[in-house]
Structure formats: C-alpha cells, structure tokens
Amino acid sequence: MKNEPVPLLVLDYHCNWFDQDKPLAAILHAAFGYKARGFTRFWVLLPGYSVTSNTGLAARRVPHGQSAAFKVEPSPNLGERQTLYYEHYLEHGGLYLLDIEDFLERQVGIEVIGQTCHTVDEVMAARNFKTQAVVLTTLEELEAPGLTKVFHERNKALSYVGVQPKYSQAAPEINTIAKHHEYLFAAYRSDLLVFDADFLPTAEPRVLMAACNTVIDNTNNAYVHLFHARNPVNGLVYGHGAPKIFPRRAQLLRRQSNLQNDFTLGVGAGIVIHKVCLGDHVFNWSAYSAWRTAAKECAKLALAAEKKDDEALHRLQVWCSPGDTTAPFHDECLSGARFSSRNPNEVLASKDLKELFATSV
Image 1 (spheres, rainbow, N blue to C red):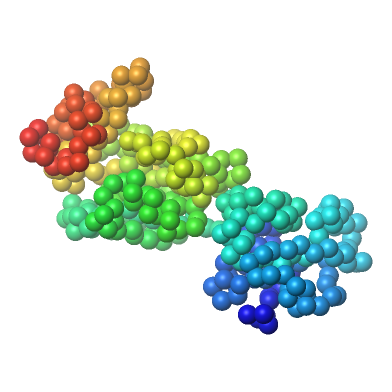
Image 2: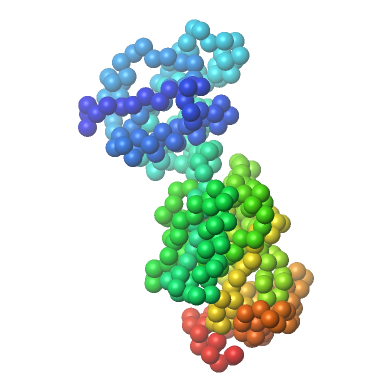
C-alpha cells in the first residue's frame, strides 16, 4: 500500500468536469471514479499552479486515512485576471492530497479550494451530478392489472424526456412509505427524484422535462421539492401522490427528524412547492387501494382541519363529496374518505388497515 500510485487531478480547462464557479464538482467526480478503480487517495492541483517536487515522496509522508494541503506557487505564465482570481487560495496551499474515504465518509475538515468541507453533504451540494429517478413500488403494485398501463405509459413518457428511472421494490420488512424512503436514502448518494408506482405522467414533454431537471442550488438544497398531481376521482390538484425531489442534504435532515404521519412534511428544513401539475395520481387501481389511500390522506387532513387549517378543511370536504362517479372504485374511495374523517386517529394508529376496510365498506 505504501508504494501504490497516487493519481493527480489537474483542475484546468482541459478537465471536462472543471467549472470555475463550482470546482468541487470536479473533485467529487474524480473521487468516485478513483474509488471505483481501487485507489485510496489522489492529488488535486489548483488551476494555474504547477508541481516540481516529488509528489510520491510527499504522499509517503502522510499517513493513510488522512488528507493534507501543500503550498505551491502559481505558474509564472498566469494572466493578471487569473492571478487575481486565484491569489486568495495561496494561504490554503494549491496542492492537496485527499484520502478518498476521509473526503467522502469521514467529513474532512481541511480547506479545499478556498471552501471548508465541514461535511461531505455540503460538498456534494456543489456538484453537477444528474439526479437519480426512482419509482417506489411493491410486489402487489408490480403485479396489479390496474397498473399495467400506468407502468407502460410512465416509462414511455420518462424515456421520451430523457429520464431512465430505476425501480425500487420494497422488501417485506419495508412496510411503510417512510421506511422505503429511508432505504432509498441509504442506497443512493445523490439527489433523488421519486415517483410513486401509481403516478401517471400527463404533462406536456417540455413541462415534464423541466420538472425532472429542476436545478437544486445552494439556496434550497435542504428542502424537499414537491410537484402537483391530479386526483382522478375528485379532481383535486395538489401534492398528494405527486413526484418529489429529495436533495442529498434534505435526505440527511429527514433522517435526523422524527417520523411523522406525513412523510414529506416531516423533513426538518421544510418544503418547496412547485405549482405545476405533472400527471394523475392513479391510486384507484383496486378497491382496497382506493379506500386505503383516501383513508390515510383524509386522516391527515382531518387532524389539520381541527387546527383551523382552511386549505386542509377544503380538501377534506372535496374528498368526502361525490366526485366523478364513473371513476374506477369511486364508492370505495368515498367510503375511505368519510370513514377516516370521522376516525382519523384510529386510521393512523391501525397496523392493519385491511381490517378497517372490511368493516367500513
């Protein structure tokens, strides 16, 4: 291990991932790439600087598992503008030896390109990596005849706008939406665009593409970004069942907050609502699914309405009123909404909603 090669990443305009405004994107991209190739550490050289000393000898002086900064002088051929731009980095060094695990996992605290990496997630907020799209599903949903068309149409719509989602099937022990999200947050180290299995995109391609490529910048990377979906039974259009973007930092905040009945609103830092409808929440693909979805949503709305939330009260009233009576499983949806509006705590506390479904329909 002592004599292993240590690759050198030179940050300049020949580096495809270099961005003068967000240079840490290049470092993160390199760290993941080098780790995949079996390296344990690598050098980073700032733009406009050069190295004349023996970097191999310098690397051997730094214990494995640690990162270090080295001072090097800027190249004499730097232009005046570049010199002014980079001169404030001199006190931090110019050459860095980064231990990959230290950098990615152990929250390295050295100065990197003039920015303090207090946590890896603060660093990751500056990267340009593409958001991973994931569809949450269960075995029941995968095998449901009522969702066959939804799966086909969703795949076709997302593929058309350049999004290739991965499917995350919940294991038997992952029996709640909250647990499934926690599983996702542990499985992916990226921003996540999450679709429910029963979400059907209907928006124009340009609208759907813009939503899928929503830029999460440093001003809102701690918030969940929520779009809107239409309820095919009662016509309500709001965030229920709609796609969500969980930036990496918001995922960590979610882990630190208490589990709440409303998973999305349970994120510690808050939520950004994008008032654009991307499709239909086709939850009424079976009698039980229609009843269960209506019951769970209306339980939350009923409790919010008790706290004088006028918007929640309006939505609850619409759920509990006859909508499109020709919609599949309309009666079960209405039954679940009305039962839950009278017994919200019983619904939220129930560990087996099928028993309540059997007795209330």
